[in-house]
Each structure stands twice: as C-alpha cells, then as structure tokens.
Image (cartoon, rainbow, N blue to C red):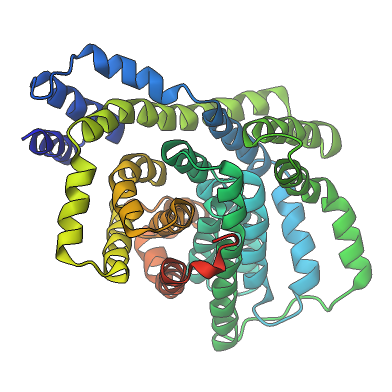
Length: 421
C-alpha cells in the first residue's frame, strides 16, 4: 500500500509538470502522512537535512563552478588549437579534435553540458567554415560531451558514491578506461564520416606549431594533472580538489589569460549557484523519499520480484541496463542517480555485482541520456550554439548514440575493462 502511494503520487506530480525535486519530496510526505508506517511529518525535514549533511557533497558546487569558469574563458579555445595542431592534417581531423577536446575538458569540468558548451563554442564556427556538416558536427560534440561525466572528476559519480557509500577515489579511477573507450568509438565513427563526406584536411603537421600551441595551452593542460594527481596521490580529497580546481581556474583566467572581469566572475558564480541549487534541492528531497523506500523495504521487495523472474545474472543485468537507458531518456542525470541508486543497490548486491562496477555502468548509461530526447541537455546546448532545430541535430546523433550504447553494453558485461574489478 505504501509503495502504491509513494509511486502513484510521484508519477502523478511528474505528469502534472511538477519539478522532479518537489515531486520526490511531496510523494514521500504524502506516504509518511498516510500513517501506514508510523512515521511523523517531522521526519521529512530531518531527512532532508541529513541527506545534505555530507562532506563529499561540497565537491558538487565547486566542480560545477570550475567547469563554468573554464567554459566561459579562453582555455577551451586554446585546448582546441593544441589538439588541432596534432591531428588537424588528417581528413576529418577536426572531428577527431572535437572528441579529444571533449575528453580533455571532461577531465576539468565534470559536467556534460559544460563540456559541450566549451568545445562547441570553440569549434562549431571553424567546422562550419571548413565545410563540415554542421548538424553532424553538433551531434558529435554533444555525444563527446557525455564523456564529461565519465572521465573524472564527475559530479554524478560523487552523488553515486555518497548514496552507495563507496570510495569516490576508486570510482574516479574506474571511470578512465570506459571514458577512453567511449572516446575511441566516437573517433572511429567521426573518421568514417569524414571519409564518407570527403571533408577537407587542415594545415600540414608542424612541430613548431605543436610546441607553440602547447606552451600557450599549458596552464589549462596542467589543471587536470594537478587535480587528479592530487586526488590519486592522496595530497587532497576529491572535495578539497574541487576547491583547488576553482582557485586554479580563477588564477589562470584572471592573471594568465586575463579574460576574467569582476562582472563576468559574478555572472559565472550566479549561474553556477543556480545549477548547484537545483542539484542540492533534489538531494535534499531524496532524503525522505529514500527513508520511505527503506522503511517499507520497497527495494528488497522489488529485488525479490525481479529475482523470481530469473536467477540468471546476465539477464537481470540486461533488464537493469534497459531501465537505466530508458530513465536517461526522461530524467536529468543527477535526478536519475539520486532517485534510482537506492532502488537498484539491493538487487545489484544480491546478484554479487560490485557496487563500484555498477556505479560506473550506471553513470555511463545515464550519461547517454544526455543525447536522447526529450531530456537531452547536450543536444539542447549544441542546438543553441549552432542555431539548428533540435530535430535535425537529434537525427544526426543516431550513429554516435548507437556507438555509445554498444560501449555501455560492453561495460555491463565485461567488468574487466574496469581496473581493480
């Protein structure tokens, strides 16, 4: 009965257009108010506070701010110029540069939308000038943006680690290889598209040009080395690394590239605060929702029901994978992680699947939702940069979407690609 109230109220509110955070909180409040489990409405406020009371969550607003600082500055364009100096001479090389720049920026921002905005803003005009298909190029950059939440640092990985009580460091380490594989499949498709459409080649390779662009982009290149090196060497925690990322981004933008004014800094901080507040409200409202799930043992009941269908580990993991992909179509990344992690964890543990492995595949699967309408934030960003209709960019993204789904399924069934598993 409690499960029926919880999910029926939640779904009804979503269909009415109520924001996800308030739909989650209201569903939990209605279930507790029913009096079935002996809970008090005061529990809602207590659980909202408790769910936000985590040191690891400090990393969320800081990584968002660091990504916004870099995406709005010169650093993204300089990184693109460096990548182009290495690979621009091959046919379709600028498409490869799009992916490599996306992967590199992923190691800075931790956000798919920020990665898409930074790389797209720097590359789309040049791609258009050189005769590349704008819809396909926008789709590729949006697809490369999904790597932004897989290669660490990653905001969704921090959220999953807090909920699942796993090590953020271990989860970050496990994200590298899947992120590189995602980049590899996108590069392969981009090269095929380049030869199929006979895109032009860029300037011939010049070691002097590589060296010059490297020196100019060096402050930006150092950022992921400092952040990730500090985390994995134990110099500072992921939360401390997020603060270091902001300080370094401000220093580089203000004193080295000198493209950061007080007015611009205020605008960036305001935008980052809006993004962070949305995520934190969802986290807060998920507290009473999670309490309802645990109090009425709803995840355990669902786990038993699924296991009664089949005891084959691979069939059940396939079903979970399909649910994750469908959730990504309709839900924003952070919302899906916060809402579904408590539901899936008992089932995953019952199957004997590592929560670390599941965390990586969960983030990869939900990240694919960033390029699957209607809630396709990367496609919206790419569409806004190019001025193309969303429908046109959505059609062009299909080959890259298929490639990423194949990588996702490989990660689901071949955990050997994850270090330490």
